[in-house]
Picture 1 (cartoon, rainbow, N blue to C red):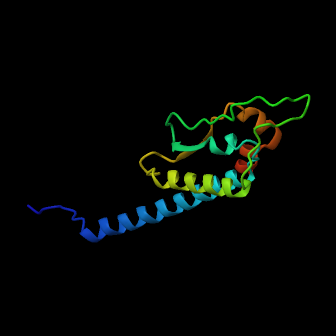
Picture 2 (picture 1 turned 135 degrees about the horizontal axis):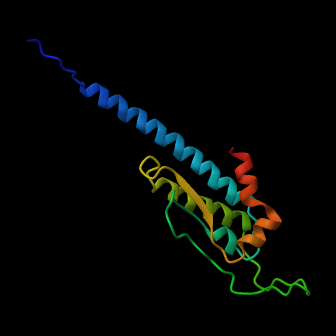
Length: 140
C-alpha cells in the first residue's frame, strides 16, 4: 500500500514570516500616519487634550487622561492656564509618543489599534474641532 503525505519545507515558513513582517510594517506605517495626523490637527490651549491621546490594542481598556486643572471663565473669555510653550513642538512630541505606542503593540495578535482621547473635555473639543471626525474621514 502506498503512502500519502505532504511535506512543508522550511522555505514555506520563511515566506510566511516575510509576509507577516510586511503586513506588520504596513499596519505600523498606517497607524503612525493616523496618530501623527490626529496630533497635528489637535488644538492646544492648555495642552491637556493633545497629551490625553493614547493608543491601545483593539478591545483594550484604559488610556491617558490629562487635565489642565482649571475652568476657563467663559463670560470673560480668559484662559489663565494657556500653554506657554511651543505648541507645534508639543504636538510633535505627543505624536512621537503615540508612534512609539503603536510600535509597542503587535497588530496581528491584537487585531489592530484604537486611538483614544480621554481628556475630561474631549467632547467639547471634538464638537468644536472635529479631530476624530476629520481623522476618520482622511483615512477611510
